[in-house]
Figure 1 (spheres, rainbow, N blue to C red):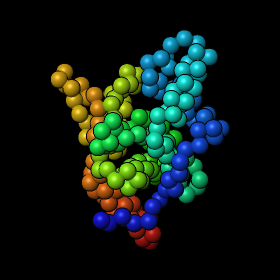
Figure 2: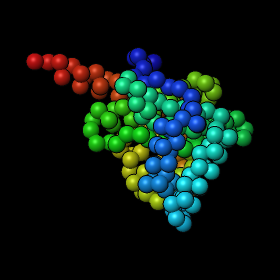
Figure 3: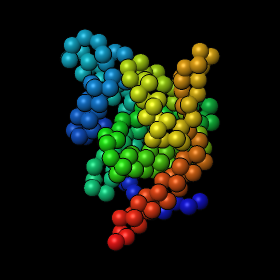
Figure 4: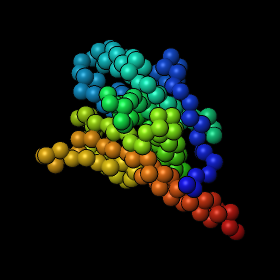
Length: 193
């Protein structure tokens, strides 16, 4: 396996950290990952967001933040073992970076790979699955996954709608290797006079 030095520091989430709480609230207010986060006034939506954060805190067996070299949190992710303990279930991902530049895209992709590789190593399992329950901006999420994180396998229901995703360890490793090769080429191009 060709994986160089990690680009991210992977740490457990501190659920009482004010930076995390603020980022979580801001993301949920704008992205509305659950339908109840789009109902009522601001205080009602913030209450739903706080309830969801508390739920993630209690059900997530693995809650990670990927931090870049500048000490900025790039991605928060929340996982738990499946009922049969034969795969890892991903409850939620909170990106904290805009995909507006190549360097930001690479940071997000690195955060994704390193977080998932950490989960695979910690659990000894090779598969992460997640349901796509969101209604608001669901198509945008699917396009983002297809474009920026090809390690995801999109699963469709009988109606042909994407309803869940699978992320296999080997796909993450292959994607991460390609990402590192691309990143090394970009560095060489930048250093060439």
